[in-house]
Length: 401
Image (cartoon, rainbow, N blue to C red; front, side):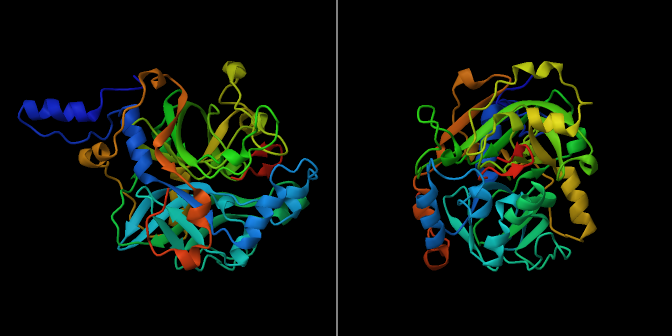
């Protein structure tokens, strides 16, 4: 079954029988419980909104005369992304995400980044410049606040039509004395084609098309986290994939969700989302997601090009672990399921009509009222205080979320 009885009810039954059950490692959890886990472990990542970026946004937003290639040549639209809390060591938290959430120009300028956690606080990430250039010319260092396995630069796009070099994965860390839940590590090798996977992330409505004007949306201060789910369509060897993408599922994602976690039916992280399908993209912004009605004729033996054209895709968490082992990244991943108390603390009802084999749920209980106020001039405004609240990226014929 895709959706089981909520674990909270299982706990009640256990108490009545005289024992206190423990969250079973292999038991499927309900849609509401998956969303609770996602809500507490999914973060939003964005660079500080400098005056230059603000001016760039206002100048280029919905400009019908903008040349098609202007996105490659100018400094670039501000691009909030997503990530997932995967480890904690003392007061240091580690967020797994994708490297295309970090533009090379922003890193070289050492623009501060902010990470927004579930308690509505934004945590400052300073000294973001790892001085590794793009293409990368050094190995990642565990002493840096960011560890990249690839890099993103518009210069690469102008040279070979692919702005990413290497594996599209990164880890960024921040310091906090607050206690945040850490997502449970899963095993990508255990999940099978046909099983349901769940993607959590923060869509950017400014990368969507207005259905009437056919232009990207104007300034949109409010953001709402999305949980999307669908069947796993295919898995391929990351070594033969494009920039490491090897997990494929029906397209329910949006720009801005890049770097968000992909959960299995047990609420464990088995991947990191990063690309939407090629068929839903155009030169300006993401269109409405396709229905995928024709995909029944595709199989796991299709080429990576065909899979990327028709499906959203993610990095394998197991592949990430192998990369982390190679560089001696000794951080304590969470192998234990989140406690029942923790899951219930953020549990909110989801309409019953959402309980389908594939779909989306935009969680209005997990929203940012004004993302611009939250991320403007982070270095002078932030000290762990509460707040109110990808960019799409050309990869050959494919676009990142």
